Length: 103
Image 1 (cartoon, helix red, strand yellow):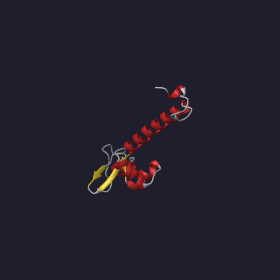
Image 2: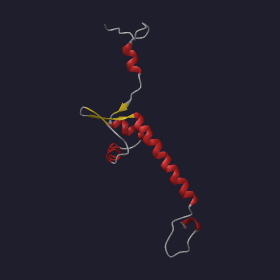
Image 3: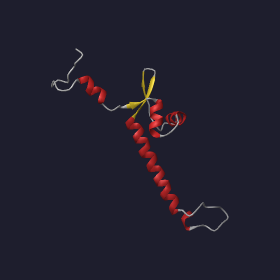
């Protein structure tokens, strides 16, 4: 029974399962994949930005959730960048009101 097949007799089922891409990552790999420390990943999780999946005592991060977080974070940063480019500087009380500071 060491040579299980996927039904069509061509490729072993065990080999197919081993080649499947992972659906989730452990804490270290998840942090590394998005380029942050484990502590930062924990804080993002605690703040509700990145959901976790508990499997017994193990905590894993779905790859789709990590990709979603990165896409949302990228969109927020891009919006802030564009807003900053349109705004010449901080609005300070007691100075002439800039057109971009008016409500």
